[in-house]
Image (cartoon, rainbow, N blue to C red; front, side, top):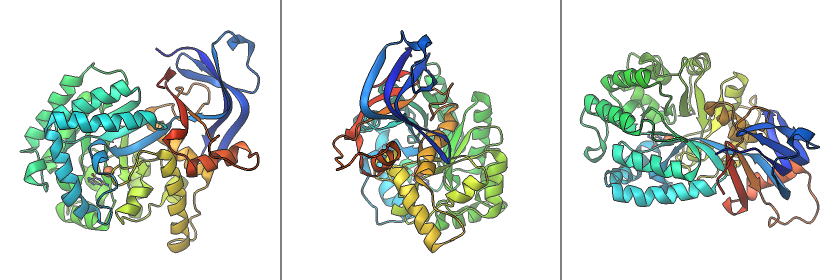
Length: 424
Ligand code: GUN
Ligand code: FE
């Protein structure tokens, strides 16, 4: 149960993409699981709340991973010399097929859930595989972890190997409904999310059925968009009637427009696609490390921010090699500099403030009021200990945070709270 309490320490959070608020030796008040504000002096009305003093440590909002694949955690760091479609065929699909075996799923997903729990991430949108039972195993484990997640049973009924495909659109839709019925009411922290893998593996009939299921069950949705040029050309062949890749989703009513929708990657959007994402309120999951590892390219994040499109960060494990969203922040800054230097000097690189915003409040918006410590936000927090990252001189809080983004790992995370509940 979420309780009332106060955390004391060096507090940092984003107000907007440009504004990082830092409060040294401040008080973060949790009231019924939500932030009641950050204060330099503790207001009298909260003086009776139990207080944990984290001393010189930093306290920041929990990080948000808008896109990763749990079954791919077992081959992270492998096959990184391939491009998307070859990588899917040689590495991804054979590994995902193993989750037909729920014993294997338990073993592999336990490692994933343990490591997610220890990370700085408090919220995540996760792809499972097409297997209903293994997806439920993953949901059970993530529920136990204390994180708040949205998890999708994947749909794929075409252009997939015999060992990882659903028999028909009807079979895929039926399994999806059965999954939704089985898990209904089972979880507090874990929500189902509609997850057509991407256009190439989902027939038109399946997309139509998924739209019906989405409407009936009120589901958010996640998928992939404009990641790789080979993939985009393939979508053009498969959907000759579509104006552009995103239009193929929109044709089936599966592209935002009042329904919470995340599209991962969005590396190569034509102008009309950017406009449609903006008009339909589609969220972008920017996955800089994956886009580098799979030679996909560099997404135009500056354009998305300028257009007012909502953007968060994703690790895209196993396109990305690990679950760290701090690492994704550093990667986002680094690739934005290369894009600026090599592709388009009119689009300025991301700042540290912007990258921190994307990994907290930017992605957090997909979950509602999360990712900040402003009043009313759900209180997700992580306590960062940079004592062992020794430095010869005192640093101000912003420099400490920047350094932490670049050089920390999970060993430097001392405590985590999700919606006012302490996870460790
Ligand atoms: N597109 C379709 N499936 C996948 C996947 O598993 N990973 C990535 N990065 N892109 C995809
Ligand atoms: Fe992905």
